[in-house]
Image (cartoon, rainbow, N blue to C red; front, side, top):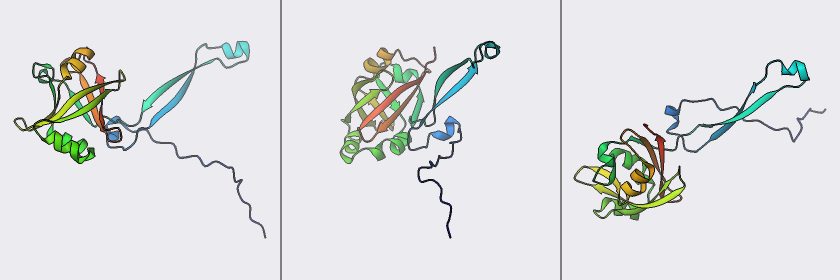
Length: 182
C-alpha cells in the first residue's frame, strides 16, 4: 500500500494580493511595495523580421501601504510668522501619543514640549524640532525650526499636502511632501 507524496521541494506560492485603493490602505500595519514589470512591444513587425521578440521592460513601484497616518494640506497659518505646524488633537492622540514612551508624552503635554527628530524622507535629512500641546488652541504643534528646516528649505506653499507619522522603534517623526501645488 503506497501513497503518492508531492515532491518535498515543491514551492507553495502565496495567493496574489488584490489591488486596493490607497484610501483603504491607510490602516494597514506594514509597508509593502510591489514591483511589477510591464512589457510592451516597441517596434511592430520586428518579430517577423528578426525572429525575436522586441520588447521593452520597465519597472513601476506601486505603494500598497501608505504609512503617512496624518495628511494635511498646509494653510497660511502653518507657513506664517507663528513658526509652527498645527496638528489636530484627535489625530495626535490616536496616531502618535499611543506609540510614544511615557516620558515623551509627559514632556509633550507640558508647556515645554519634547525635543523630537523629524526625518525628511524625501531628502534623507533629520531635523530637531519641539513637539508640544498648546492648551490655548487645543492642538499639538511642531515648532522650533519648522519654518527654517521645512517651509523655507522645501519651499512649501499654501495647499501643499504633507504626510507625517511617528516611527516608534526609532522614536522619530517621518515627514514627506506628498503633493506640491505648483
